[in-house]
Length: 364
Image: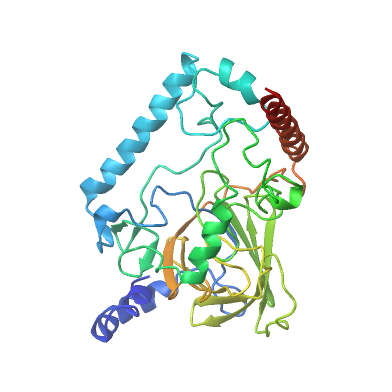
């Protein structure tokens, strides 16, 4: 691991660390061809955010006291929510009422929303991960401020147009007079909501609120990366070439090769709707690097380049913690989503309610 970090710093540090790392590198599990064996199950849950909070500026590292404060705050949050559940009080505000409940919901719900997942279903993690023994302020490490680069003007304009169709749900069909509404059909909802792709992204893939396990199966010619969230299974072809640009895929087209003991995966040709964390899909190019460490964990590093969205590339890295006794179970989300019918029916009911109110107001 010291070697991998040294390569990113100075040549002098590289020369100093080389003898130590060379000895440690021989201790990682290897396949019959001598390549590191990445196969296994990993847990990526962490309290470290993708984007660095502004108060940390360009500081990549936390002090132990700052890291402990983050962990303690999470413990208190979990304890507070658990106490709320025990005394059966309404969940705290912060979410929108479900579509289709309208006035009846607002009159009977008290707090104004039904809440989200309770603590039993969430798995944000209970620690701030470390690299080289240092706590990190964010997963993004470049740009130095730990945040994505500024967006292009065209991307800002597209985002502004999309936001017109995404408002808090107040139980009314605020879109009823629009030529194109956000709930006209299933295809108008996001692909994650339709269970086509997961919420954690495929390439790159991120920690999430829950379902934070990843599984790798490695062969001579392929590497499969199974993502617990939804049902995304990436098939990476080793020592191959990319498919023609016209062959767009939901998970992108991934090819891989070895650079020393690091597996490099290059992915592009995403489906136009397969953007993740702001990327466009169409012009997204992702390079990932997987390095097996002496303790069995993986150092996962990725760079995203999408010139139609950001003014420059950005890079992140975090740990995948090995969990040899864990298994990845099916996440029963499927294309269509059981709640899709309810969303569509609820939208039609709200639209009819809005039309009736409009007709009544016009007749007075």
